[in-house]
Image (cartoon, rainbow, N blue to C red; front, side):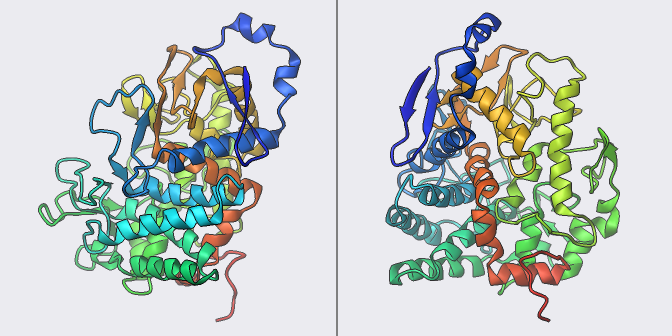
Length: 455
């Protein structure tokens, strides 16, 4: 193992050799290998490397995040310069982590954000929503045959990041205040109410000028999209009514019909149309990069309990390991949507292919700190061949002797952000301080330590 000092950071980055460690190799390592690096150093390392995906690895014209980066330079479809809208929202927040951890300066971040905002102002939008994918020209790149218009979920992830950036810079110097003002204008330009398809009590995921509403995907029931409904209610220009949240998202209360799995309440019904008890772990991450679940409640759930139990269920599932997969246990756990042996796949209890996705446990750090740190230590000291330039590779399977040196923005992005939320609460404090967001949460009946009961 080589020890490489991270520039501008008091941390260490562990980069290993090729291939998984054999059992004999693992046994031959001294105990010093497993205790030489503090938790702080390990968290610094993984935060730095995953931040670099969005800094060094960004698409150069826009400054936004590439959908994927394959270190083997094999791209089965599209090239590496396709821009991801949602992943870019995660990246905006990761860059703030970079400033706070002194990986880059505030001025460097400001310059990058100015480039990004200038690009977004000119990029294709559809009733204010950006598409799922964009070319470096700013033109839409279809995500699927009829998905060549606005993607409201991806837009919500992007806006979540933009609003955190706005809060960070809004009281700064004149140049920083100009950036904050431009972000407010982008945010106010999203026509959330348009995506109710003529005033229905539900939000629709897609709209295309060519195919109109043919994608026909109303978003309801619990999944990764809570942030979309919160932002739609928070909009100062195009808000939705509370009934859209209650009837569309919460399914007239059906969302609250939880279950018990591995001795833990799921808090909400994760699947409307089947009996699966819990979803993939990205559901506990994407909406909560900015939305602080601590003390967050509404008529349906305690969102801290929801996410803690979700992560702990995945941990307990790995300990139980009902399919007997090699490698599963206290040091290696967490299922989410990611690459797998046959391309991208959804992984969760009940849909388990023997694939562990590092983002699942690492991005759950606020919910399961000890269990997540255990996984981090194991990965960086015992399986360091699974670590590359931009942090842990997307997924691996000891059962199938499989991994590829490839990354996805939507998996790398939550890692530095959620670890920072665990360490300092940075992104939670920023996003929850936004006045528009606070108004939206109150409108929907949420309670949170960030909400003042002044009305």
